Image (cartoon, rainbow, N blue to C red; front, side):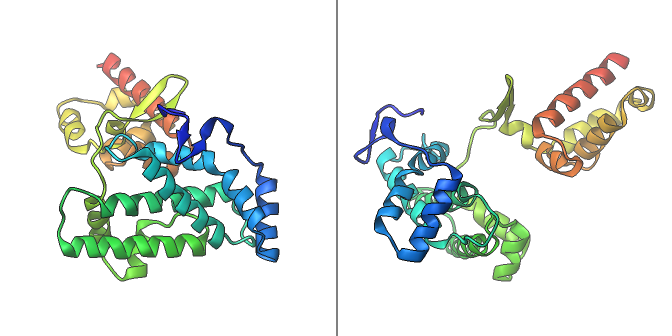
Length: 257
């Protein structure tokens, strides 16, 4: 844990336990069937490490860590109260967006960056719809689903939600696999700059030396303007693999030219 102190909101983080998924389900059934406060307390305590892992994404903005932890626990309790045992979903998978949503609402309410009332109202509706849909679907909804739920345009929902999100550095790491770190910058479409570069070079022969998957990745990234995350989802491999294949393909092209 990347925290400076062991005690957070009176909780000794070094002594927190972690429950197995089967234990979580047993406790959830006991809570539903008997309303046991003891079972609920045990389930909360057994998921506090999850709360700590989620709030790490929201630190470094000047907020008190104790406040973030308490808000995260509120999100955890909401997840416990709303989790549907009939769905084949892991409890931790359901918890993370619930905890994150609670933290975003808290940061939105105390955000020092001023946005218009209409944007803030739309963002509030979108966040409420997101929570409702998360309860219904047992997973985080897409922007399209949220927009449909509140009868708004997709682009308006995106702008509204972005208006209450704190900015991050382009060089903030978002993923690391065997030392191959991906940064926020890697997730941005760079269609215009690459189009200019491609337009000045004759790439037909160089492209012919690439494998079909490498060609497909370059086409999706630089001609369709997709992010590495979008490409990974479309061709069914990890984001880290897309990054490595893309870099390797570009090196082959540069060498050929």
